Image (tube, rainbow, N blue to C red; front, side):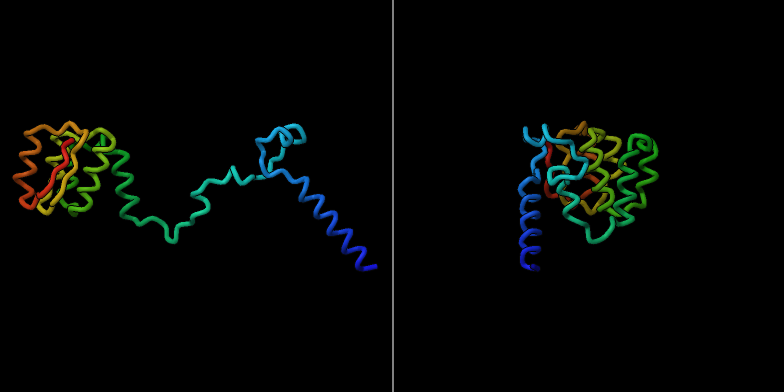
Length: 145
């Protein structure tokens, strides 16, 4: 009797799995019913890859400054004078990607320890680049494409 109940429950599980729709975009799934349950396609890849640690305070601060860079351009020389060189380089990269990099910003952020510089696609002129070269004596490579 227990074997018959076990066979019956296995049969009902098999029937359930057979009727289960894993592809919500198929015609059969559209015609039967609309499920609000999450599907495999609804999960983003980033939700599968968990970060081990939260972002650092430094990277959060750089992100905030980068988002509001156009608001602080006039005072950037004062603000960035005490920043470490890697933070200044990160701000140059943010400004370049946001199409904000020009002579004023590159001169305000120039640092003597820079060895490489990417100003491609920016509005940095020869004047700004010459000023950076005077400050950054260790500069070995500049991308100006």
